Image 1 (tube, protein in one colour):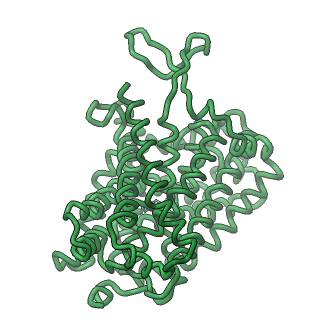
Image 2 (cartoon, helix red, strand yellow):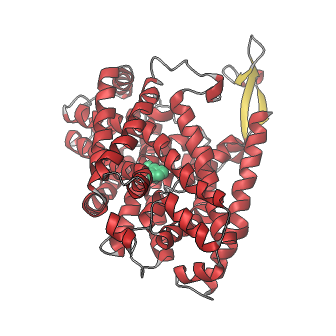
Image 3 (cartoon, helix red, strand yellow):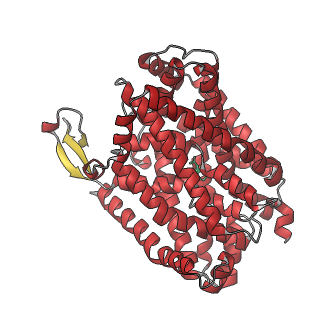
Length: 484
Ligand code: PHE
């Protein structure tokens, strides 16, 4: 009860759904999912991703909400409490700690990408894209990536926007944002989908996204370059060797966690503010469906446009959304207004997700250090902002800086890799084991309000045997793969 006085509580469970959906739906759905599918073989990647959402994401999300609601504190202290309640080893609290850092790391590059979206609000509003073809759009995008002043301005703006909402706190800040945005975002995506059907190449888009070819997921082509290193194939395929790889599979798994905001305490922190008598399972399934539908619709709209413009490559990487959608806005009637609105919605979606990235850390500082919410937010958002500058520079001055201690990646790619492919899946694995094996089953059943219900038994089984084993297997294979 005292906890609810510190942080507040959602006024009803519908607000929890909106806030958790606000956290889940963000750049991961609209920006990241399409380009990852594009880079990792399309249909097969999408299928593995959907499989991971259903068999790992949803069960783990239920577990995470449950932990939060039972502990009713910041993820770190929630874990402490539950560890004490169950008489378990203190090491389990590292689930909470790892989450605080994962949130901070994600926020650092998330804010840079959200900054790109803010910039596009202005570029689109000013009419720059009107009548622009793929090549012109591409050069506007390239120009932005090299303009550090502008990038820094929007990265900073977004960090401040996020900080203000977090500092305002749960009921005033978090709930309000989520409530108004989601319906508009969904509407806008469906308008883009309609555009894709009428003007884009939807048939090719659908084929790419939903016609799985597993050889594209499981094999990569490599060649040996002049200095004797094995590198990605650049020339003709006859010079290249086909090699088995598990990396795209790990990416699909990692993205299932990323897109549902799982494995780092965001959902646990929100669960802590959830009223006692709301149904965890139903709520989670609603959030999962909304999140998935939004990602798939965004993917279909983007690929319909991509395949109608041969200059834009589906494997174009992080710029995919920024290089494809403006072509549509530039050519459709009212595209200037609609495009502006769209990037505004993307910004707001990113905003409501970003808030949940630093909430776990802020909540902990408030509880343990007795910090004022504003000070706590300044510490967290400020650190993420600083680290974010390295992510920002990864597309220009640091683009060649791929040191060995960053696993040969740029800071941007490393932060993404470290969080999406390592920290979140690991966090999820530990959460599944903790709820499935360590907590008392009676308490878990009580919290789920489903004692003896057959669906409860199925969920428990999946959480105990399926989710952790799948995460473990993908992990080990991908690790062997990257070491060999
Ligand atoms: N789920 C968010 C998105 O898809 C990102 C996020 C990850 C937010 C982890 C919070 C925690 O954009």
